[in-house]
Length: 143
Figure 1 (cartoon, one colour):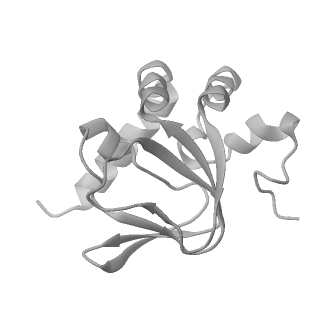
Figure 2 (cartoon, rainbow, N blue to C red):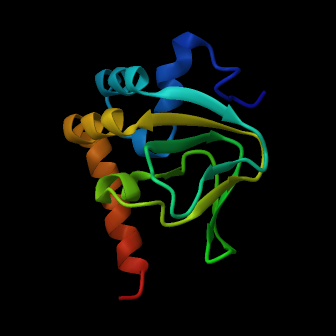
């Protein structure tokens, strides 16, 4: 049986979070903090999760399903469970740089800006994981 947010027992939720990209290096204490700060949401296939140019108010981690990042009207990056988005726009306090669309029904771990900001400032392993990912992605982009 596929493990999703709907099928995972409450007792296993912290373990489930620990399998998702930005949370893999977090301690049990940090995972409890993340669980308290996040909300679990489901969206249907075809749903626009973030629209380019819109104000970004949340950080998203794809927990199940698949999504795609659209840049300049074309599919750019396929997303799978464990991938995340919204961090760059929240950190830079800028509008969404791309559109993200659910390709299938998806489940997401979602944090508002205040929750994300508090975790970024207070959960060292979460911050390190995001900063490493940002550094890696910027190193691959042409100047």
